[in-house]
Image (cartoon, rainbow over all chains, first blue to last red; front, top):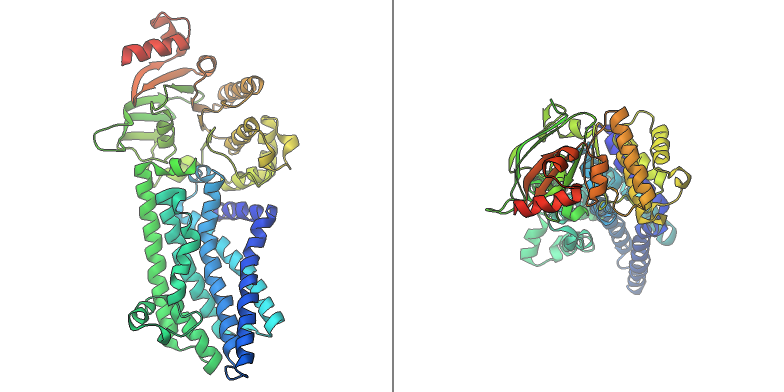
Length: 264
Length: 243
């Protein structure tokens, strides 16, 4: 793996965002809107129940901020790939001396930068608007965020492989696929609320363990080790599987000759 | 030994039909090979296969003495480059930024100097801080050509590089290619529908039709052998006799 190749691929994205106000705004606009809307709804609910649900604000705002981490991590991969397709630049990248591993590594690095940028904004807003500090999760914040980023990457790489296979017809997946997991990831409510069958499905979603962990940290001050181990184990499995799937699709694309078709 | 050696190359996308079949040729250092053929002849597929974008069904591609394979791909591509009339560069970026990205990607020793040199070569230096989206299609092609020269390639693959260029710029582009091939030993494989241009620039031409190589050799020799006035006449004569 050559650092200069990854640097070049990241530089292309940095230039793009530096030159595009709309892309830059898009990164912050939706999480800010979500935070405003759901934050005020939560405040309203809390006040209507005369403080009988004191942890509500913490649960909801924390969940919004952390769900955005997952979503940005996924978008950082799939939308960055789409940018090369939209600009008809993909072939230039694929005929450069860049390996697929370097390309995926650059997407992950860009994704991490986008996550940090968006997280800074949402966590600051959470504190400014609702006096909620995500950092009260303390040392547990890091494993939580890392697991959500990892799940976002797994979805992002899988989505990118599907876009590579099916072309721009599949671009909607870059926005839609992460949301498929939202209802079953225990983001805003605990897993026990789900019907029995869906509860079993939630067990296989790393985010559900991360968000259960978040609620445990807020209410009891501890991140249950089992939730952390489940989330980490599943993420290792899913990232490995999505990278394997991407490589397989890439090899098939070389045989079917699809890269020039989707790249032009 | 040629810098590019193609031996029995074939590509089948569907069972029973071939996009390319049994293509063999050799390209020496400093030689320009023009690939001719009607639409669907397999010209672009051949270029994409040499660029490792499409895997061959049969045959071998040997470049710089190495068989093109997943393990040799990056070493080979580092010494090559490509431009096409159908592949762009990101339009939101400035010309300079676009070239910087590729200069770093190809690990060019002095990226800034090389970017300036490549932009000057195709008359775009004054526009270096403009965004690529402000360029006309001809200027975009020149930017793509600048990108293709960023790593001082030893082998350059061009897919219809002069399509969309005005006659003066097209002539200047041809002049640059010929000069680079003579002075720096640049080997070029390129496709074009402009047969006059092919005749002027190419040391050798390869005629493709329906995935098969119908004819290959220096333009003057082929024109003499077939007793025609120019490549255009030869093109039609070969197609008629080949079908």
